[in-house]
Image (cartoon, rainbow, N blue to C red; front, side, top):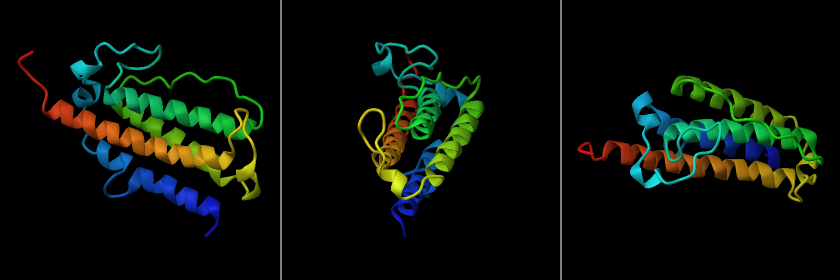
Length: 160
């Protein structure tokens, strides 16, 4: 198995493993649950173009936004890419559709690389392989945060 094959397998597993994956933490997600913001996040600054911080909906817009940025980094290397706006979505269903589309585009960008290109430098000094490995960690990080947000929603104080 090549380095690229192993990275693609890890990238895929971060999405679709039965447990500990983005797909598993998004299963049966409701609109209300996704838009819920726990009070501990109420003081966090709101970023333009993104839903309220700490909400699952925020993660569902943030991740495809990052995927788009990563694709641009890979395809414009070694030059710094232009900034991309977060994807617009009016519903959680649309946000998940964006996530799947942009995640597939990133996977395609990775799959198009040769083994030698994995060692190429990016505009900030890191390498392509570092960026790709980071995408897997990033998905795992947000998957864990989504799992916690779902617990916070299920145990919310409804008297407030």
